[in-house]
Length: 146
Image (cartoon, rainbow, N blue to C red; front, top):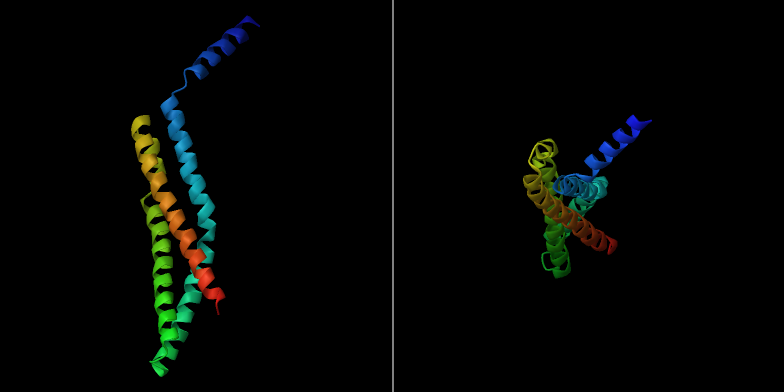
């Protein structure tokens, strides 16, 4: 019985001496992955929107070629190209971030270095998330007009 108290006391001391920087790095890693995991499932919707915008571009291109004086179609075509670019940038941003993120390598860093690296990764994935959500919202609004 005395041995278990000694063991429990020793375990309690070790737990109390936990490295706060390592804990912060672990917390940051979870935050980074939470952001990624929240937007990654939306990639299918983003790709569908890219396809719908591409179809709209083809329609509008046909209209503007047959009626070059139709400024409304030209304006809508310009907006569609802009949205297509935003969606592509968001798609590329996610793909680039995933290819560049090295979670296994980050775990090998000293806690201070991991905190710095994960802080930068969090900033990057937040930007990817913002780009994706904004471009998707803009594309949905645009497509609802038709």
